[in-house]
Amino acid sequence: MNLFKITEAKAPIVPIIISVPHSGTKFPSAIKKQYKKRMRTHLDDTDWFVHRLYEFAPSLGITVVKANLSRWVIDLNRDPKSVPLYTDDRLITSNTPITDFYGNKIYKSQEFEPDQNEIKRRLDTYYWPYYEQLKTLIEDRKKQFGKVLLWDAHSIRHKVSTIQKDPFPDMILGNNDEKTASPELITSALHGLKSGAFEINHNSPFKGGHITRYFGNPENNIHTLQLEMNKILYMDDNEVTYNEERAKKVQDVLQHTMKRLVETLQK
Image 1 (tube, one colour):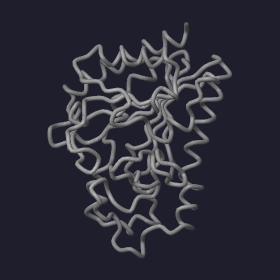
Image 2 (image 1 turned 90 degrees about the vertical axis):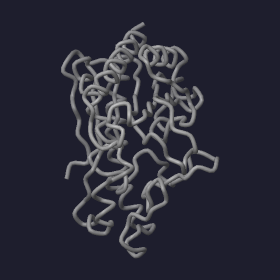
Image 3 (image 1 turned 120 degrees about the vertical axis):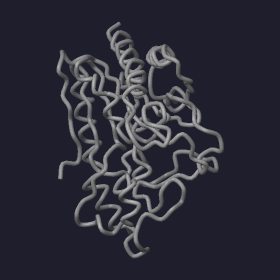
Image 4 (image 1 turned 135 degrees about the vertical axis):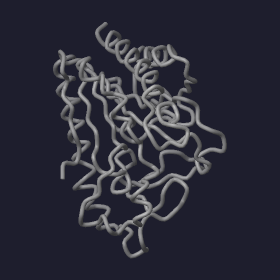
């Protein structure tokens, strides 16, 4: 099974890489039946269709890396030691979660929940290869351009009460309180995202996950930004099916934002 899909740039390469770590839906055959069938069928925590929103990116010279495995197999955006990303009261799943975002068990029984040996195996087999691929692309772009931006693409349900009581804003740009990217790139991204009709938050309630924090090193011209977006921006109100009309409005804003970021990087 391929762990990820790389969509190469179809235009002259630019120093931007897009990572999509949570839209995968596959399970390795060896462990697939350990999960509750009902949970596996619905995969509620999946960032459904996020990769489709960035289908324009290769035509701008951007390489896209999309994970194929479900985040319930391995969560690529969590700390490898499952150190919590936040210190408030929200529910935070681990790198090998045993519940969904609402606290519902995802395995058939406790005996199937990964122990430390299984966690290590999944990290070695599924987690670090994704990071190594991103690292290779980052180093290639850095060598070619002297700088690089990694954009980590996510989405979330309209409301998740175990994270916060209120519905989420339309989009949240995260950079760990401006530590993972230069002020110029952050400003450029915010201006691009605000060009549409969407509500844009900055580092609240999400500051960027482990990928953003792990790779971001603006002092070394390696910049990272995470974009979290509300699923009803591009899906139906029940967050089940892809809505072409809604998605087009999102894509227009994302494409404009990427063009702005390319221009900023070229200065």
